[in-house]
Amino acid sequence: MKKLLIALIFAPFAMLAASAGASEGGYRIDRAPINSKDVISLQAGARTFANYCMNCHGAQFVRYNRLGDIGLTEAQIKDNLMFASEKVGDTMKSALTLKDGKAWFGVAPPDLSVIARSRGGDWLYTYLRTFYRDPSTASGWNNAVFPNVGMPHALWTLQGERGLEVVSVKDGGHETHEYKWSQVSQGRQSATQYDTTVRDLVNYLVWMGEPSANARKKIGVVVLYCLGVLFVLAYAMKREFWKDVH
Image 1 (cartoon, rainbow, N blue to C red):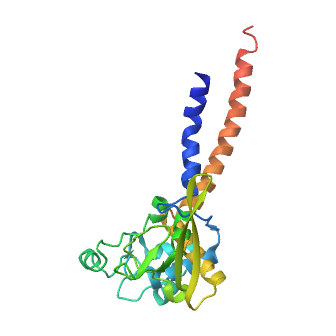
Image 2: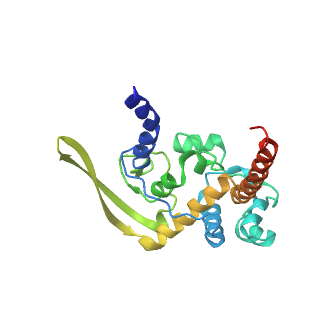
Image 3: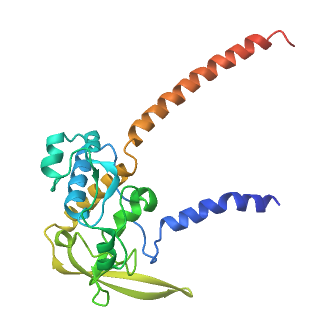
């Protein structure tokens, strides 16, 4: 009975650990080196998001002026991140309609306001770095993390075109897969530079999913400190009230 209870307690943690290292296609998920306090990274990620992602995806739950929280002025937002007639108080909507998106890609591109909370930063970081050329798909692209995804590689001019060969390997009666990458054509960035660009973009997507996270954590620390002080005072009061009971 005791072993069963222990197994039930630790089973969810075991499943989380197993899922953390794998994806829908069996590709191992990399750790995303993100930092929500790195303002320079967040600003670079916002620029990449506006230039590459918003052609198809929107962020309808985030307003442009909210980017002031990552150190951007209203003038910088207008000059560098807004390319149409939007107002700085408008939400970050894409010009692509749901109808057109579904017609072009087979499914409407999702809103990215909370995609990092849905997928996780590690998944997004790996996903954006594992596109490869596949002539069998409608877009000519495929992804090791999300096989047969309808989205083409929006950042291919930066990363270049890559090929992927999946090799089946038998190890002790179990079949595993090895992923062999090849560079088909060079992009404008080196591998290290592209990883940094993706890091910044994912960093921004994580921030965008909960812009108040840093402030909330600071408030949480203050609340815990106050509760600690109140606990000490309450314990001292309890001892004073009960000291003569015995």
